[in-house]
Amino acid sequence: MIISWKGKGKVFLCLTAVLILCILAGYAGKEPSPNPSNSVTMPMQEEIEADKLISEQEGFDFFAEYRMEREKVKSKEVETLKEVINKENCSQEARDAAALRLVKISENVEKELKTESLIKSRGYKDCAVIIQAETTTVVVLASTLRMDEEEEIKNLVSRSIPCSQDSICVISRAE
Image (cartoon, one colour):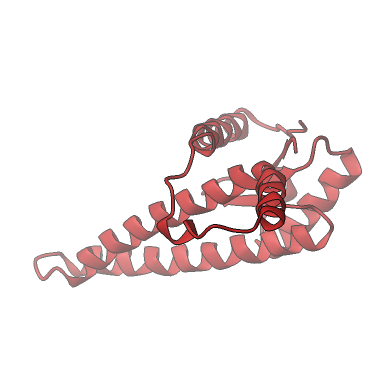
């Protein structure tokens, strides 16, 4: 795992991001509830191929779970901000701040998705980009990253999310 730490504040932010990712990884170990729409019996060959596909995707569960959690959290935040905007007894300043935060959330979602797509286009199987106030964390599905690979990722991220490369933390997650 390669983590670039320059400054104690960045170390704290990276450790916080890693802690959040570890918590989310705990959710990845849970078995999903059965889906009634999948109850149709498949022929034996198709069943074997489906099992193979599922086992190949297990390495990607962390990223899928993270994306679902990210979407839930952002949806709740958006809902709360919309309530503030629509409340008549809130001050205009509070409404304006909520509206600005909604715009920022929208911008960050777009940047995260765009950056994740750029990183995947460079041959990485999967990744997650987490934009925070002071740092951006990138988790890449790779057993290890060479320094040149980390620099390439930082370069992509810094162009996609206008930020300094010093504020980018790259973490590799084993396949």
